[in-house]
Amino acid sequence: MIPYGKHFIDQDDIDAVVDVLQNHNLTQGPKVPEFETALCHYTGAQFCTTVNSATSGLHIACLSLGIGTGDIVWTVPNSFAASANCALYCGASVDFVDISPVTFNICVDSLKAKVEQAKELNCLPHTLIVVHFAGTTCDMQSIHDICRKYGINIVEDAAHSIGASYREKKVGCCEFSDMTVLSFHPVKSMTTAEGGAVLTNSAELNQKLILFSKHGITRDPALMTSPQDGPWHYQQIALGFNYRLNDIQAALGISQLKKLDGFMEKRRKIAQRYFDELAHLPLTLPSAEKLLEHSWHLFMVVLNIHDRSDVYRQLHNRGIGVNVHYIPIHTHPFYQQLGFKTGDFPHSEHFYNNALTLPIYPSLTASEQGKVIESLNSILS
Ligand SMILES: *Cc1c(COP(=O)(O)O)cnc(C)c1O
Image 1 (cartoon, helix red, strand yellow):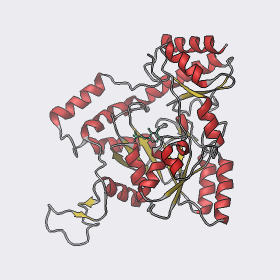
Image 2 (tube, rainbow, N blue to C red):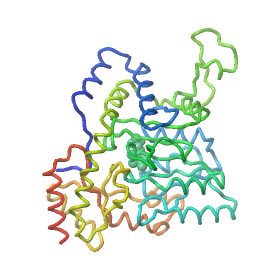
Image 3 (cartoon, rainbow, N blue to C red):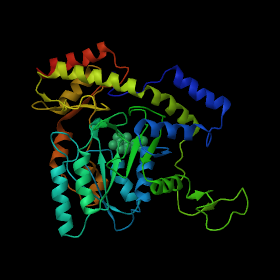
Image 4 (spheres, rainbow, N blue to C red):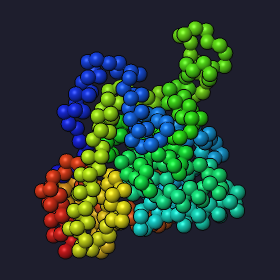
């Protein structure tokens, strides 16, 4: 079976992990800060706090912004559940803004209309979490302009988009947001097995991110409420979590990050070939306009006339592990219990009902991709 996505591990990655096992601390050693510095370098952000998953990262991003009971957080339905769950963890409530049927990212016009309505009703969101779906960056300038006008914070869920750029700067630089959250789950663009990071340019937010990811405990005399009893002294000054990444994971991350631009090049080449060889079929391809800015975490097509479930089954029968992204968050039973209904966000639902995720990953061979294209040709024409 050709999967839709796959991590890429080489001997350098293995050596980096073995080196930690043989020569370093397994946690709280030098590799975590080294990885954080490397991520700042790569993205252009000033501060980075690594965490054990993007889900944890989204949680502490919300906590650091002070999100709590009574607050409202908006995100898009067309994402993984973690993009919305993080607000609920903090006691806030969640609402959604539908996607654009063209970019499959948050629809800026819907956002604008919803914000104006919320202003009238005095229920503006505290924070907007945007998702750069599949690796296409959102229209951050417009989103930033709208949110700044109404005092809404912005968090970028960039689980799909490390390696992507927006206006010649890397995703993660936080030029148009308060924080950006990355994921290093194996199916994402680079991996630490499980892992994530939160990037920001705010020293104040970063201090909170560090606290919340480490039990709320500090050893920084400047943060402690009394003079230190001695060099061993620490204080818990907030209720935090153990969300740390470990040094084995960080060593893998450092090694993977060095290869990220190479991964991006391979993904772009695969995307280019899909554009070239699928254009005549009755399906909607992603926008090719931003081919070079896109991280191509996912390559999605929308079927125009064929039944998606049927095409999915036929491809699986031929050994092609296409996937479907995403079951809209508001249609999950848990969210339906909160009052959301199918039909609430029609563009996300239409996309879900007709989209297919084709295989794309650095080690996908030309002949494997040829098989995907050939199968689509024979099923759809
Ligand atoms: C994968 C993913 C997450 C969660 O990432 P983890 O590191 O697995 O916690 C969050 N948001 C989006 C959009 C994702 O695709």
